[in-house]
Amino acid sequence: MKLSVNIDHIATLREARKAKEPDPIFAASIAELAGADGITVHLRADRRHIQERDVEMLKETVKTKLNVEMAANLSMIEIMASIQPFQVTLVPEKPNEVTTEGGLDVILNEGAIRQAISRLNSHNIKVSIFVDPQLDQIKASHKVGAQAIEINTNSYAISKSEKTTKEALKAVIDSANLGRKLNLDVLAGHALNYMNIKPIVKIEEIEELNIGHSIIARAVFCGLESAVREMKSLLER
Ligand code: PXP
Image 1 (tube, rainbow, N blue to C red):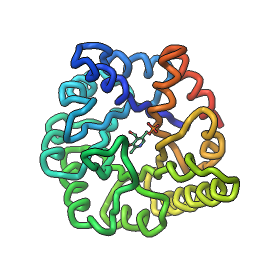
Image 2 (cartoon, helix red, strand yellow; image 1 turned 180 degrees about the vertical axis):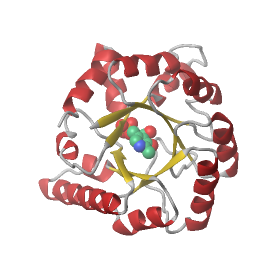
Image 3 (cartoon, rainbow, N blue to C red; image 1 turned 135 degrees about the horizontal axis):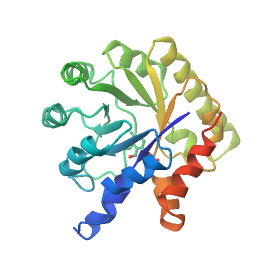
C-alpha cells in the first residue's frame, strides 16, 4: 500500500517563529528517501503553515507525487493552475478549525465542485475529494467527475468501543468497495497512526494512505527517516 506523507506540521513549526527552518522542502526529500510514495500539503486560506512558496518549490523538487489539499474556491484554483501539482484534494475548510473536521459535502456543493474539477483537470491536475465514508457521498463524487476519493478515517480512528470501531471500519470498507466499483482511485486518511493502521491496510481497494500527524510526532523523537520507514513497513501487505 502506498504512503503519502503530510508535512504540514514541519511548516507549522517554522511559522511558530516566522523563521526559515525547519524547511518542508527538506522534509519532503527525506520522506521520499525513506520510501514515501507521495508528499501532501494543505495550502490553507490563512496560510497558517504551508505557503505558496512551499508548493512552488515542492512542485520542482518532489520526485514522487505532490498532492495539495485545498478548498474548492476560485483563488485556490488559479494558484494550482499556475503551479500544476500532480493532484489536488478538495477539502472543506473552516477558518478556526484545528484540522480538517470532516469530508466535503459533495451533494450540497455539487455545482461548485463539478466546476472546480473541470477547471483543475483542464490544467492536467488529477482531482481527489476528501469524503466521509457515506455511500451517497461516494456516488456524488463519481457523478461530479472526480478521479479519486480520499475516505475520511477519523470516525474509525477515534472510536472508543469495539462495537463503534467495527461499525466505523465497515463504513470505510463499504465506501472503498463502492469507490472501486465506480472506477475511482481509492485513498484514505486522517488520524491514522502506528497503532490503528493494520485493519485499514487489509482493505485491498484502498491503494494509498495520507498520514501526517503521527509520523511527524514520531519524527520529533526518532527522526523523520525512521518514522517514515516504520510507517511504510506497516503498510506492507
Ligand atoms: N487527509 C486530509 C484531507 C487531511 O486534511 C489530513 C490532515 O491534514 C490528513 C489526511 C492527515 O491526517 P493526520 O495528520 O491526522 O494523519
